[in-house]
Image (cartoon, rainbow, N blue to C red; front, top):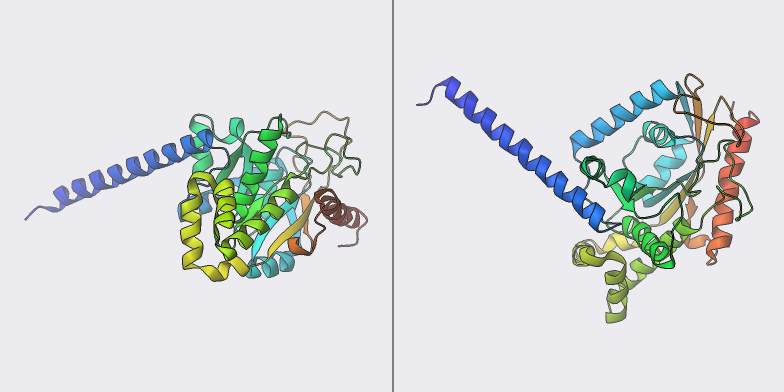
Length: 314
């Protein structure tokens, strides 16, 4: 019989082979993210979920300080019933870390291909559950890119039961924290997130019908992963009836800045932040006009921010 030392060496070798295999797996997933914008990587492992929460909480603590979270009951109520499209305002470089640290659930987050899918960042981005889109500076440079981005959002919201996606809908930092009403002003509310949610609802209806035209839409949205999605909903048809909610979120940093200020990664250090989660908005109840629907959501986020700054949540 082999001695304990031999067994220990064999176990160590098997463990190393497993880690190499998993590392190679996530390298491959990162390459798929870069090659196919909007590609849905497998769900985060338990280790990735824990590591993401720990690292972002540490980053949030170092870069911002303490945080207060209000409205968690809205988050829990919506997450229990269906899918979530989480839409926060965007005013600082560490918004992503503050949200990840403040929201006690797992979700996918959008990043550009250059940010989360190039080289080793692609491996980390896939491991952390990101979705890569090929926009530049928060904008689509062509109609084709805009349509591909909308399909990416719809894909993330209709891939499986109770999907959760976080998008910063402004596409550009607004240091003062607000969301301009004028759509021509940089940092105003973009309509892509709402268009993606509305397209996801169309996917659900198409899957429920199951006819040739409907499945063609599903294949157009989900691309190379369409067969996987169709097979999933055949096994879980009840998931097609889940509501899709927009969850408005306002991030208020206690050290405030003007839009004209020059901010660095340390500009909010020690200031602290309050994250206010609003009541969920059923996407099916929004206007069919994405501009009108986006304005409804913009008002909801801005009202949360204004009420927080007026001390209504003290």
